[in-house]
Image (cartoon, rainbow, N blue to C red; front, side, top):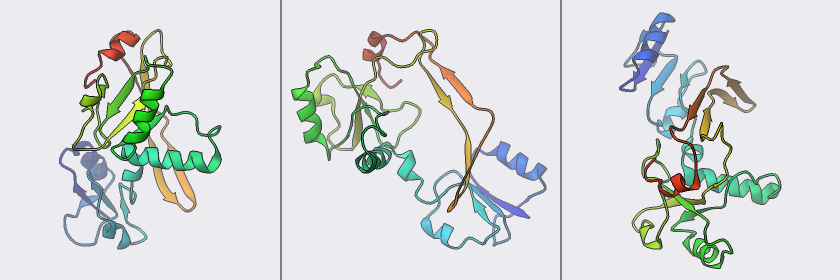
Length: 202
């Protein structure tokens, strides 16, 4: 069996596939796995054979883009109630919800609230900033703005996040495998609201 690899920096994946007995197949239909860095076009999924797999699922941007993820969260909250979906802070997608955001901002009884602004499709902290002035809001692109959590869970005073790896092999029925190992990332400095106010592309 063969594999296709169209991802520039995937030497580890290539090594594992070769060690497993698969051979490279850059052309033709004789492959069982296609590994790519970017989301393939929709037609790539439509012509898959039963034995072929791609390391993405269709429309995955609906979960990986912050604006789309919030839209689905808001829809589920509307459907099942706020009591079941109350684990994300108040969020707005601009420019579509700019009017609603300004109404909350101006009418807020908590003028000291911090708001964090993020590009919808960036990663690794790029483009993130704490809103200090309305003039800082992007005017030529969309953004996601959320109330900043000033009392987060901490480990001995340090912010942290957990990275868990799952493999989704099917949706009907849903079949998900959880990898036993994950990552815990700790901040370099103790958390205070002051450090949050100083946040700039971190």
